[in-house]
Image (cartoon, rainbow, N blue to C red; front, side):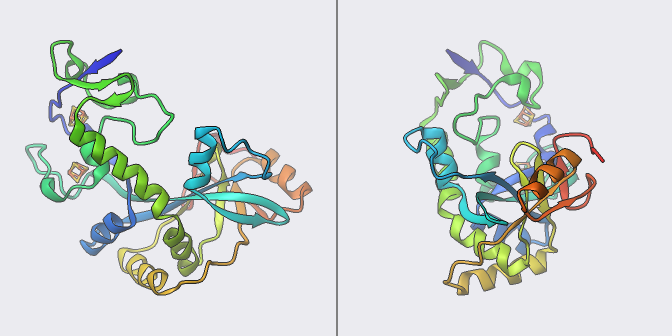
Length: 251
Ligand code: SF4
Ligand code: SF4
């Protein structure tokens, strides 16, 4: 099974997006005065998970342990460049003005950055003509056809695991310790670029692991009640500032 593709330079993927960044890429993005958010989600973690399952092993490698009340969790933190409308680097002719220094996530699009997630054209913003059958092969049996792109993708995934400790310290430096339940949404910390850079500097100088106590935010009353029954600290919020929801608000 193979997918063929060629970019039409329509520019759709450079609008209204959250681009997943490594810590180093986030530092550069924020240093240029652009917005970087920190997104958090968590999974209850019993310790009996089958870590021989590659998907479970990946989840463990890209998360850190935390306690919510008395319930063990694992927390995933994602740094994202956020831009409403066009990316600040997008030029009027829809070319990237940051081409040589663009983040890895831009270099691999429309490939899927996450392992164990299939990429299909329907999930992408590219127009139908970008997927013509006579175009170059993009992906073969779920892997990038181009060796250089495969290396960039592998590097991107590796940083998702390597950056876990410093992102945990970054969240602590920002005073951010709330996550959404995985699958329900994402808790969103929106520091200014200056604040993010200052917190990153603290995170780099700190060598001790941050406190493991986290709480949950949700926009669903049933989730709030369920967690409250378990004595987990939980806060009911509305979708919007600080919370990106996968579901309609439920009060
Ligand atoms: S950095 Fe370049 S490729 Fe990436 S979103 Fe911005 S304009 Fe597009
Ligand atoms: S949406 Fe697809 S076709 Fe359009 S610029 Fe982005 S990668 Fe190219």
